[in-house]
Image (cartoon, rainbow, N blue to C red; front, top):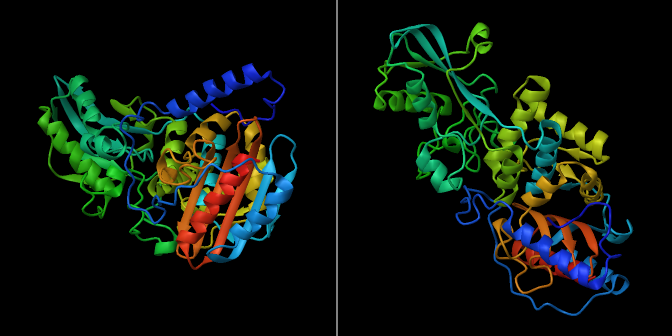
Length: 453
């Protein structure tokens, strides 16, 4: 892990510095090895990866001489730029332009969402999908019902979907069915109920009138296949909870557990929720989910995390509840102001300033979850939404940042470091974008300049 915390590497001997940086770079490049060989595929997303020109590495830069160049670049392709670059070694602002002005964030909103999820829920936290029994089990026969209780797990789905889009990682519905069989249940006299009540039943965010969006699968407390009906992504499910419940019923029958094909949706009785479940699957930890959210700018995961924040902290699995917690966490814990309307940034009204993003990026370095957050950011020229950007420049492999793209909005915020051990936080927020290609190329030039400072 590249160390972007408060201490500096500059005091080390040249040999130790070079050795340490090589080792740290190796750790970053091998982070997330669980899916490094088979990275997760992106879902439909307006913040899709872009290809920008390959730049030359360039000579070393001087902050005094290059701030005008960064400001000029920040004005490319848009008429409402905002920029701030801060040295993390000295704390001094290297360059700024309209840094205090609020700007629409697009997917830079995910920075606030994932930081809050890591900070409030914890890096090692996981979401659980459980099955409860109601009634007695006699001679392999459950004289009663089964309840499938959703826990807001965005990874719950079929093995084929997990293999195709989550690099094989996630909560497999067939594992639940297998656990029921291993518990000795061979027949269920009642029926299987699905429970999605940990969240409200609004399927989308403000941008789509809270209905299902083309860019976000339908949200559900009992999510399934990221809201799609199958791994081909041919269409969205009208009710993910019902689809999950029907799929579990089929999986049970395929394993020799006789159960009615008729399913229904109902909240799990409170008395059952106090019992030990007969089966449970757990999501990957929050560090993994933050990385998947930021790597390919996964809107579905971001919105599911936001509702989970509301459910865990306020017992209210609503987008508005999660957004209030994100706003308060940023303001109180990190001294950064943000106006979040959703978790992904698809709603144009999500806003903050370059200065506030720099405050967050600076202060979050002292938090215990910083390594997980830093590892979640795409690396220039290497992976995620930055895989085909900044190639050949000083920024390649040295800038870790979150992209953001909407109609009229382009953003890039994160960290850069150079060979001498200098470290920087930067935020580029472009609004009223009229040429997105020029805007992204300008962001890449700014990042390359920062990496040469």
